[in-house]
Image (cartoon, rainbow over all chains, first blue to last red; front, side):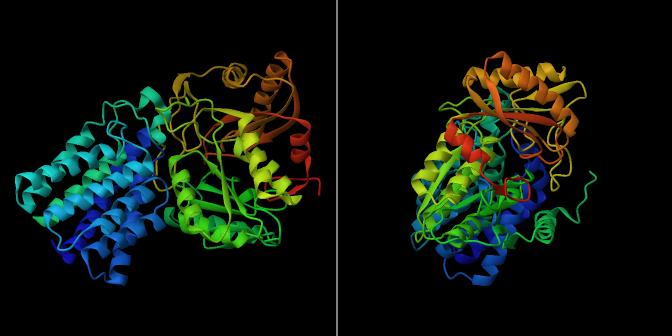
Length: 205
Length: 326
């Protein structure tokens, strides 16, 4: 895994979020305030600008630049949460970037999201996609599978985790105000986290 | 969607340009609204903020006796830490800064990050969570902050204007929040410019009970009934959480799309309810103060006053949207 791949990851994130912007906003409209797609589109567009301007010299720098940009430009809850995910990953990422190093850094990033959002698995948040993806990466490292297959498994785990939020009652974020009425809707944060993992699997293939 | 905008992307910037042009008492820089005459040495600075779309909250409450700066985010999106950091540094007169934060995950996270990063200014935060429609338990994000925000900004602003210390200003802000409760009802949804269509579909025959201020659906949907019955639902919810007694400050707030005539219809019912409980409407406010774009509906916010708080409420204020006694 190398610097160019990480830059490509964010380019693909920006592309997938742009393509799915209206769906993310619709999911958010059902249980939140209808700005998730718009916010992430604006955020990842800014990330690409920041990466082009700063020409980061390492994988870790790509991640910390992306994280800081999301925090500074997105606002809402998704800015600080996704920003912390990438910034913490960048801080934790050891060189050379093997699959094991990436999986370990990703896990630290997810822990940072859980801590900041005070959310755990089952609260109907982005953690419900991120945590299964992290677990899939750890299992892939244990089983010694290749990078491409590992990232595919992580992307699938995120997608399944996101679908699993549909029957849940939200306990964090704005959707929690709806109580039982949040049941039956996919969480928009879990849906965007799925796109981010799909983007990584896509560029690694 | 038919809206008086140039484009969905520039709506906040364009609106702030308009505010700057209309109100010479304000100074606007990098999407932060300041008092043109600030900061004042030795005075505690008050900074609030949140998503745009709730006008006049917060930018309309920047001025003498209220806020020193407001940080408007994108529509229904909290501000970013950079805005809050800029505002905090700019309004510090050496006596520290109070952050007034509504309890929404995004607002809380961004204000927390900003407060952590501004190491050179003493910052205290007060969290507003007055909405009784939300069950306050371990299993939700906690009550939302809505109408009480205005009460807190006004009273804490008056105290800061008198030269009180940061801990005193923060204590009054927290006390007003403790003494205040709100409940909102929507007759229609609203359309965020970037989304382009109403956030939720609400049939002509129905209303949403227990809404927030972001066009999000409420706790329950029921058949439309009279203003008397709707006011009763809202006031029962408030009263069952914080019994109405003594002197009250009562606000009937429009959500942006309801005529003042209808808000007065509601206020009459609210006043009758208060009287029926043996309490007294000592101070009142009726109008659009904490809105949700063009949503039809109202919220009612009640604060149990004491003499000190009444004096702070009565103290002079001079802002674009709230002005008396000066």
